[in-house]
Length: 134
Image 1: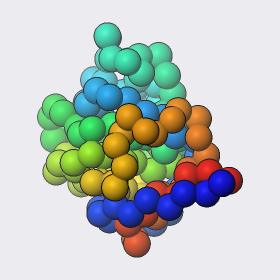
Image 2: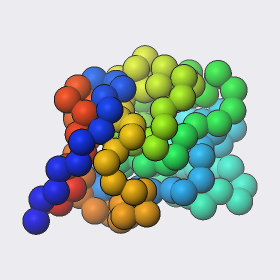
Image 3: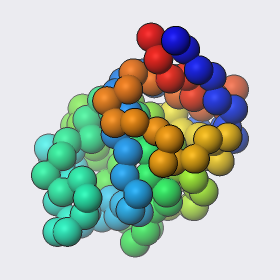
């Protein structure tokens, strides 16, 4: 069964992949290795997990504005997520998604607690939607 959830569009484009959900914010500067795409922040719920090709869902970003450039480096290295979902976009992640060409939405009309890891999903950052299911 397919479910379509409306959201606010942030960065244009579409991305498809398995959902990777975190209830903790992410810092791309020193929190994600731009060479491997692996979360390296100690104690983070996704520590040791690759974000490459996923629909990365996390509440919001944290940290330095350099995080935007780390997102761009992830894309250049082929290690970026296919798309990003935030509960509330903030400038660092939004700018990073835009310059890296990573589709992004926020404020989905579903609670993050209802998003399940590994569910197949598609984000449409142009129209503002999340499609879950095959």
